[in-house]
Structure formats: C-alpha cells, structure tokens
Image 1: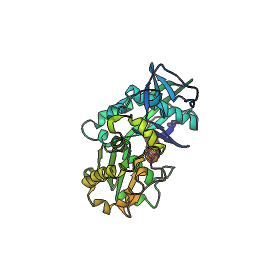
Image 2 (image 1 turned 90 degrees about the vertical axis):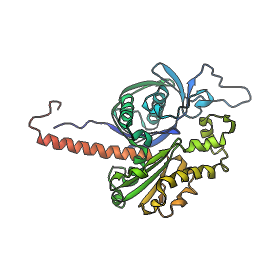
Image 3 (image 1 turned 120 degrees about the vertical axis):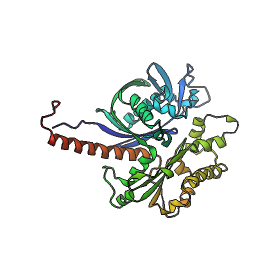
Image 4 (image 1 turned 45 degrees about the vertical axis):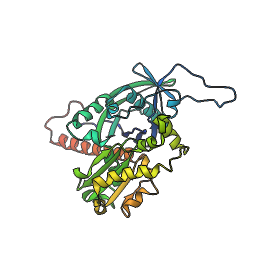
Length: 348
C-alpha cells in the first residue's frame, strides 16, 4: 500500500493588489507592492517620525523591497501584465515575501507545500491556456530559498494545481473548511451560480451550470480597482501602489470616481450577462472591489447577491478547500489502485 505524502495544503491567489495565502490555520494578504532596492537608507531626521523600512527580500542574487511601503523606499516596479505570473524576478520576490508573512503569522511549514493557484480568466482560456499553466507550475514547483531582512527561509513546493480565480470563489461558497459540500448549497452546483470577482486589475465573471462553466457567460476585463485609481490619478503623479496604500488606509477620496467606475463594471456585466442573472441561484460578489462597492453593487442583483464574510480572502480560501477535496479524491483513487495491484509498491 502506498503511503500518503504529508503536505501542507494552501490556496494561493496571486492578485495584483495583494498576494493571498490561505491554509488550515487561516489566511493573510501581502500587498503586491515591490520596488528595486536602492542604496539610500535615511531612517531618522530630527523633527520627523522615524520611518520603518519595508521587508527586504533577497533571492536569486537580486534585492527588492516587498509589501506595504515598498514604493516609498525604492524604484517602483509595476508590471500588471500576465507575464509576471509566469515567473518574473519581481513575482518570485513577492511570492517569497508572501510566504515569509505566512510563516511569521502561522509558523514556518515543516513539510512540503501543495498549492492550488487561481489565475485570471484570460490566462485559462484559448490556445495558450496549457502553456500558461505549465509556465506557472515550472517556477513554483521545487525548492525555494531566500533571505527576508536578516532571516533565511526555505521551503519546497511539491504540488501545484492551477485553476481560475473565480472558481476559488465558487468553492468557498459551496464547501466548508473540511472540503465537504455545505448541504444547503450542494444543489446549487447542479443549477446555475454566477461569480463576480472585482480584483485589483481584473473583473472576472464565471457562471457554472451542472458542474460545468457556461462559456458565453464567463469572461474577464481589466476594469478592476486599478481603473478606479487611474481615475483619481490625474497627471500620473503617484504610483498605483502608493494610491492603493492610501485607499486601504481610508485616506484617498474616491467619492466622485466611485459611481463612474461602478458603471464601467456594471456595463461589462450587462454585456456578458444581460438579465440572465435573474435565473441564477446566487451571484457571489468577491474581491477588494466588492468591499468598496458593498453599499451599491449588491442592489443590482436583488435577492441573488451573496457577499462572503471576507471578500478579499474568499478566493484563496476557496482554492484551499478545492485543493483539500482534490487531494482526498486522489488519495481515494490511489487506494483503489493499490487494492487492484498485483504487486506491492516498491516505495513502501
């Protein structure tokens, strides 16, 4: 009989606004802000508050500032295209930074990781879907060693499964923390459920009917929170990371721009869904944009809108639940294979 590998199951949502990890002990987010590490280091000036530097990540011979405040300390690197997810140096540094925060909050993993990763819809469709998934797996799987400030960290990613971000939101709604269907919601998997994910860079739409994605209702567009910040950023005086930090701190006035941005989102939804959302069992609203529009967006789906308790972490949490379910299924299938085998597995 084969022995099940001991792995730490984590959901990973590599968003443009924040990287989110979710595991058995909970989840957290690390802002997707990164800057090339400069040589300057003034930390105290008489009469001014001391400035604490952001986390410094050194990996593969490169040094970056990562997370909140990074754009105040070095040259901002803002690559919002999908190429970053295939393993650019800044993406690897942010990945290591997010793992550092997770280790600091919940303890450094002492077993290899099994990641279920959510990607934007556009990366998961068309002729490039398989190559995109392969590129993500290529750099995530294997050993990782890096230095965060004065501490060296290392981990091993044994498994990577890739799906769309919106799928994570769906399984967060359908399943409990043990990866089992919530009885009152299981029937929804066989009917129609809509997902509207308003992230930093993209707005993702997904409709599932009878366990299958309905292609004509499933789409993505780059009208996420980034678009709201662009409306505010007249003259391009700030980096998007700087504005995002102020927005999260409640220090950015977006009252005038919110209705304009919301109409761009609802216009995209109208184009893709029309009035068909009325027949859905539920419309799940997730992502940081769901918080910004919490007083108005749900009203457009009267009687159908469901906002989870933590819209920002919902995707990563759902990916974690999905990964747990898939690993249980793989284990069961492996046990069935062992029962049918004529010889014992030599690895036992």
